[in-house]
Image (cartoon, rainbow, N blue to C red):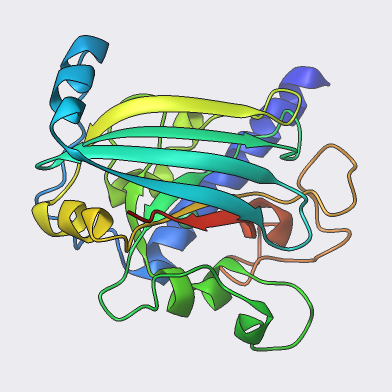
Length: 226
Ligand SMILES: [Cu+2]
């Protein structure tokens, strides 16, 4: 039961990632984006002279999720921390830094619920936060391509995510983040609190009809401000 559930969740998120990348159109844009791990000591040293942006993460979709994120940057190197609580427990949560040259670069509001169903989907949020620019994975690639990298997103043990990693991104994206235009979004809302992403409460994801919207809807969001 446990193993099967887990595998189902993975399947769900694989699809999520794939269609999200396609729908948001961000995957191919980051030509210069390469994921590079650095040691903790390197990260600390480079951050010392870099600039820092911080986000208070506030709930979307009445998720009740709260959190904080800090990004210290120098050049293309970003030292990212994310802390969040009250996430759908023990489920994987895709998390990204979004930014769009033509987006408002803020968190979506009820005004972005364009179909007025009192639910905000990932696509409805795009005019606010833009496409995915960095995937906050636990290991391996962190470019927008890793929206696909389901096995590499944190699982919210007891609803908590504690994430820390140094990543590299494209020059333009790094600059936008320093300018206060990066938006941290964590996805995955278990609306009916039944411990899994299912179709019962929110139906199918608009990104991919084979997926529950619960797996793709944004749960919490914050703008990384100076
Ligand atoms: Cu996202």
